[in-house]
Image (cartoon, rainbow, N blue to C red; front, side, top):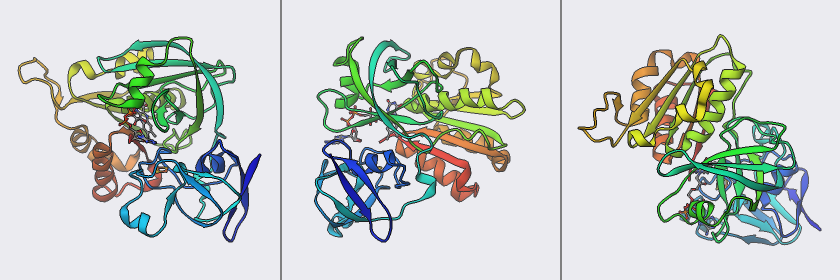
Length: 333
Ligand SMILES: Cc1cc2nc3c(=O)[nH]c(=O)nc-3n(C[C@H](O)[C@H](O)[C@H](O)COP(=O)(O)OP(=O)(O)OC[C@H]3O[C@@H](n4cnc5c(N)ncnc54)[C@H](O)[C@@H]3O)c2cc1C
Ligand code: FES
């Protein structure tokens, strides 16, 4: 059974009853519904309910401000239709999924540590792993409320292999469940792919990739795609981490590291007496110093915690006036 969602002044689509959020139902139907995080953090999927019944999954989701709530706004990623509904929002061609997202059964085949707090998870599906480098999938970690997004760190493939680099967040319910409550051989639901920060193979420019912490997963994926897709174009990678032990880009890239024109690790909390003679500080500060003169010739991809992505947005958009179409990023809420 499904519910019919009508867009005020436009077309409609069906959402399977009791299963999908409004957002995921819309994207599955090929509708260009605006969104970013899919998990209640960013507010990009706000809409107005004009008629019908809609359940709210996470009342306190930070993607809505108090003002939004007073004005009756809702988040499509935290809303589940309970009847046919009419909604008001503006769709956009740029939000239409390039690969239709699907729910799949995925078996955890392997988990191996890459740093003291991050592990690589390898999952397998019976279906091919269809996505574009830089996209993410959604999981429901057992025992945690709500959904969590994790970005693929490998390349699309016909073998149904999906790799993720997941950080164990101190006190975090979802990430700890992925480490402690999921055993090798267990089956999870993998829903995806989602996200707009994917590699643009057609863009004829040098590529700058910037990772903060667990943002390394999608950056490895995009860097691998860039190495495969672009002889003649250069790839510059910046990895921001707290200490030397937290760096993992070279290990995750393996032989593909040979295709990187320059890799710059930047450490924010390495001890003064550790012998580290590389760059110290925040990764966006090093990007500002090292890339400034060639920003106009580059395509930018980045992922990591909101303070890092906000600093980079300011640098690229306000200071360097890089066109928005050349900036692709995910904030890890
Ligand atoms: C697009 C995207 C890609 C990401 N990719 C990666 C990645 O590759 N690797 C990685 O390590 N991390 C990634 N993250 C972060 C990841 O999704 C989790 O936020 C992180 O693992 C912390 O989750 P936690 O459950 O441990 O922490 P918690 O603090 O328990 O939860 C954090 C997040 O869970 C959601 N949440 C919490 N409570 C509820 C609730 N009651 N109902 C619904 N939702 C709730 C919210 O989104 C919240 O921000 C990504 C995030 C986004 C948005
Ligand atoms: S997509 Fe709904 S809050 Fe981010």
